[in-house]
Structure formats: structure tokens, C-alpha cells
Length: 461
Image (cartoon, rainbow, N blue to C red; front, side):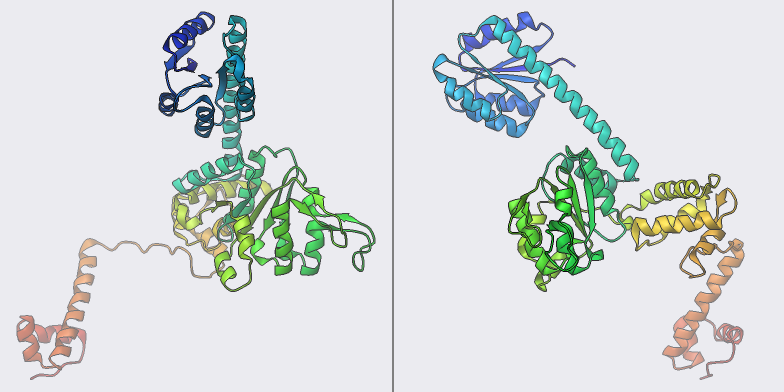
């Protein structure tokens, strides 16, 4: 793809001359010239640009403000500032604001070519890195999160975007939707991927030990503290920490966790000193935190600190189209774990699994498919195996009744209708057959024959 340079200068003659000069050194690059910062922003919004050269001093939107707004549109765009000899301080300020380089007027040909070549090379490398990250992202998400329906595509797109930042993430959703898998994938897709990823199951740790587990303690801090110990926040330094089921942590620990989020430091139990930490915090919960805030069980200020970015894995009910893919994946996984020959799901089994409610979501489906692998001795899982796996609970897919011939089915439906109708009309007439015959339009003799088929009842009037 042809690279494009956007050249911004309010002096038309200078701009055109600079464009011709750049073209002599880079004949394969498209050069677009505009005379104002506003026009440059329009171009940037309309078409991709690989490198921008802009004058610093321009009427209206000057180069400094153009740089700021440009980097908001595209933080990775390479920008080279052009400035007069007396504006070096402004150029240095532009570098601090995100400009890649600056050139002073009058511009020397060799310096211009070197700066443009380096700028275009930087853009190329950034593009390659983006492509590699996208490939890695697709591979990572396809490996850990099975599903290609609309809900899962939205989830994967959100995860990729969230992973690129370093903000705190709150992962909300029902039990069994894969919140821990989501957290692990966010870490592996992030710049912290090569560093530790530590998961803390908050409800599983007794309240009196949770503070020590998270923040560490010094020797003698409490009975049994025979030596100092680093907390999990320190152990995760440089990486990420997942506080799983954070809605269940006690209020005393919530208060200290709030300080960690605010100050990015921890104080080990029994110590008067704090330790700086460099950790990305991920938290997950299946609870209604807003309700817990209203009931006084969760700190509102902690919620706002945690709820910077939110990811909500969809329930299995919201992505039924993924059930066949998930079931096949889990069946292959189970067969591999038990060293069994591969098995497949019969079409009617797939239909049954797709229609089940799965209140336990993906975790429930996975466990059910594991039972199917156990109960199916052959190569194909059919409805009989599903019933065995359900353990006779009676909530599975029943074997469909065979269809009756058309005439029989019609006669059955007609007889059922006739019975209901006659019962209703006799109830209306309080059993008066003559009145019932008049209302229904049925001959009295015919009505009596119907009543005879139905059995005893009604009375003659």
C-alpha cells in the first residue's frame, strides 16, 4: 500500500516547494498539501496518513494544537514539526507533547530526507507491530474463548481494546461465564504479558488471613508470623493480579484495598512502611455490587475505583448459537483427557443441548459434556446418552413421539374440540339439551349421539 505524507503549512509557495523536494527523495510516496490545521484534521479524519509534517506557527489552529488534536485521533501517527530558528523552545515542547521530530527553517535537504525516512520507517514498524498484536489477539482469544456468535465477537473486541490499556478492569457476569478466562486473556494480550499473573480467590481465604495474603506481613506481626512474607500484590509486581469474587471481601479489607488503588502502594501487616507496587488490577464478581452498596456491604468509593473499565461475558442463554461449537470442543477435550477415541454428537443431541437452559452457563455445559463422554461407549452421542448423563432428573430432551397418520391425527383433534365445545355449551344451558342444540346449531338427535359417545351427562329439557 502506498504511504501518504500530509504536509501542513499556511504559506502556499513554501508548502509546494517542500512537497516537490520530498517527492525527489521519495517518488513512491503520495504527498498531500493543505494550508491550515483545520483542513489537516479533515484530511486525517477522511483518509489514512503515515506521516505528517506541520508548521508550528500558523493562524487559527497552530501546530501545537494541531498536534494535540491529531494524537487524539491517532495516538500512533508520526508527526514532524517545522519551525523557525527562534522557536526551538516551542519545538522542544512539541516533542514533549508527542511529536516525533522537528526541523528548523530553512530546511536542509539531507536533514529533511533523514527525518522523513525515519518517520516512514517508524510508521511501518508500528503497523507491523499492530498486525502482529492483532494476530496474537485472534489466536489467544480463539484458543481460550470458544464461540463466534455476535455476543462473543463483541466480547473479544472489547477485550482486545481493554488489554491495550493499563486501567483497572471490573469483570461482571453470572457464575460459569468464564470471567477468570477473560481476565487471563486480558493479561496475556497486554504489554504485561511476560510478567506474573496471580489469581486470588477472595472468598476462599479466611478473613483474618486475607489481609496478610494480599499485602504481606512482617515477622511477629501476629501469632504464627515466624518470618516476614511478601504479599501477592508485591509478588505480582510488573504483571497483573485478579481479585476473584471481590464482592465477598470484608469491609476492613475493602478500606485497605481502596488505598492500594489510590496510592499504588501496600503496607504489610505489622509494618509502618509502605511498599510501592506496579500491578494492573483486575477484579471479578457475579454479585450485584450496586445492591451491596445500598445495603452497606460494599464501599461505593471502592466500586468507582474498580469500575474504570467493565467487561461482561455473556451468559450461554445469550449466545445459544455457540452451544454446538462449545459442546464439540468440550467433547474432544474430555475424550483427550480420558484417552478415549474421538466421539461426535448426533444432530438430535446437538439440538437438545442447544435448547437446554444452562443456568450454570459454560461451566455447566462443560461438566455435562464430560458426563456424556463417560456414558457413551461408542463413537456417537445420541439422546439415550443424554438421558443417562442427566441421571433421570427428567429435565432433558424427550424422545419425540412418532407422528400419527393425517386422518388419525385430524380425527383426534376434531374429537377433542367437539368434547370441549359440548361441555361448554351444556354448562351455559345448565344441562338443557334442547337449548344447547338451539345455541350450537346442532340437531338435537346429533347432539344426543355426541353425548352418548362422551358418556353419561346432561339432561333433557
